[in-house]
Amino acid sequence: LSQSYIYSSTHVSVMVEAVLFAPEAESYIENLQCFSIREIGSSRWIVQHEQLEKLNIQAALSAKRQEDEFVKESLVSHDKLPVLIYELVSIEVWKSRVF
Image 1 (cartoon, rainbow, N blue to C red):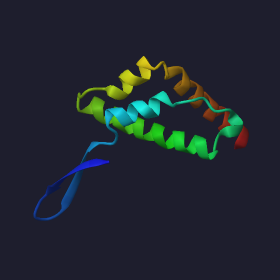
Image 2: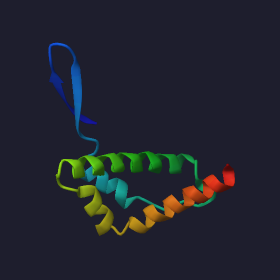
Image 3: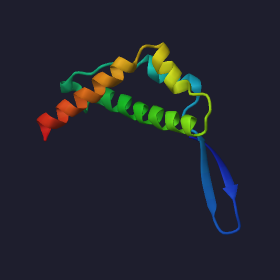
């Protein structure tokens, strides 16, 4: 996390500037892949899930600040939206079968 610190006399507040930088986000996105339902929870799936969480946070920060939306642009340019949709549906199926 890239952070800048704002100091005041009573407390310290942290303002997050970026969760990911564009090259790191692009690398995560290039490597996105679909996992079978049996692979959900595997170490490879967990790594990708953590990366997706960071991408989500960064995309929200960029949109909120009206900054370069490099996460969205990279997802579109690398044609990874179908992978995200597949993963969302897979998780819902997994939840319905496990619970």
